[in-house]
Length: 126
Image 1 (tube, rainbow, N blue to C red):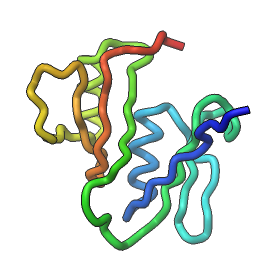
Image 2 (image 1 turned 90 degrees about the vertical axis):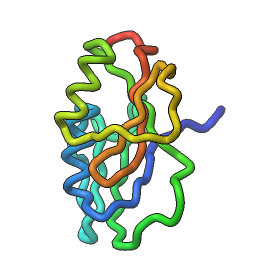
Image 3 (image 1 turned 90 degrees about the horizontal axis):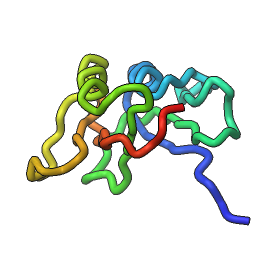
């Protein structure tokens, strides 16, 4: 038996802001709220399904250096250009990490500056 990713933990200054953003991006819902402001978001079916949940852990200290992990997303019901426009309207912004312009993905940042990529569709729509 192998392991699988069940949760991703993201430190952030404003868990509520990021929860709203990522819930809209991924069609997730808030699954749990802790007294310290930590939120868990995930699929409507809850924890334990095929998709990992995301723990948004409140931290007032800024991250030092560049994060070594980022999230890649795929549109499931529209083409990449339409999804890019939707993500930008939700509050994502373009991020320049030295792309050449020839990539088949877009590098974006969430409202707190965490980089993520919108890939050209590699998944079949659900």
